Image 1 (tube, rainbow, N blue to C red):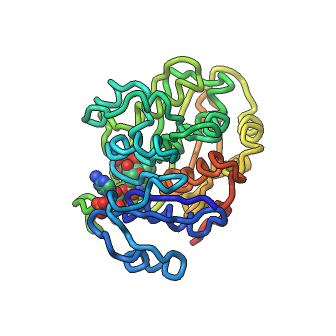
Image 2 (image 1 turned 90 degrees about the vertical axis):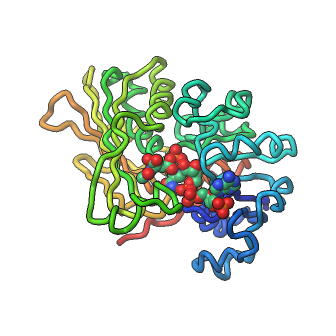
Length: 342
Ligand SMILES: NC(=O)C1=CN([C@@H]2O[C@H](COP(=O)(O)OP(=O)(O)OC[C@H]3O[C@@H](n4cnc5c(N)ncnc54)[C@H](OP(=O)(O)O)[C@@H]3O)[C@@H](O)[C@H]2O)C=CC1
Ligand SMILES: CC(=O)N[C@@H](CCC(=O)OP(=O)(O)O)C(=O)O
């Protein structure tokens, strides 16, 4: 058994971590923080966990984080970078669900996140935790930058095409839709029920902070810089991301075989049969990414459909997948849930 701590246990990704870790046979959650709800039992806030976790929230200062084997940060951007060094020095592995360690270029990070970075040396050390691309590096890491939700769906969708050198990487389009839980649990007008239900809109078209993260990942796959247009939309779902990706083919390939072969050994990526249309409902509450690849009218445009649950493969589930790799557990341990449908 390993001991796990969660900083930011009252947010949507925090409670999703709790749901997954409470079912994990090799993990005991021993520390969970909230500044606002310190002292409250976890089940009082999240009744779904009653009987599964007899722990109360503590303030970050009082929680026994240094006694843990691994600490997850499920906090707003800029929090993990203040506390990670101390934990690493105490021998604790750190998995950050926020973006503090995702972007290697500190100038780019500061521009998009609007703050100075507290520890650029740790950014250089951090491993971007998208196991389908770099599980070998994850294995030996102390510090994992857990990818963003949109970046997970988009990178897994483009990966086979870019690795095969089959598309023009100067013109990539990612048209993405997210459920409202992607915005977190904090109160904001645009996520109120009357604002976000029965409504659909794009946002951040001039620029979104996930664009540089996705671009960095796609450039690593390609071995050179790429051009990407990324347009996120808010859709009246609670959970789920649907990414529709467009690219121009530059050589003849059997697209279906390319995707099936690339993901043949990936437990968490399911390539649908030809002509498939994955639904967000088909991955709900699971760590799966389901993908379909199309070539409409036999033209030179390839269309990839990639769906995930933003709170699971897009956040907490991927974090647990990374934890499993870090500690030498089977990669799918505690992550074999069948999606909830309807
Ligand atoms: N929601 C999603 O789909 C995804 C989210 N992420 C990222 O994961 C992180 C968490 O997201 P989410 O769960 O949605 O966020 P929430 O807003 O729902 O929750 C944030 C949590 O962090 C705690 N917190 C806030 N400020 C601080 C602080 N300064 N120090 C310590 N704890 C703090 C809050 O509790 P309290 O204030 O009581 O301490 C709360 O528990 C974010 O960085 C987000 O960008 C990544 C992928 C997907
Ligand atoms: C619907 C919605 O608002 N989604 C969030 C992205 C999700 C998130 O929390 O961002 P990270 O993955 O970088 O942590 C947004 O667009 O800001």
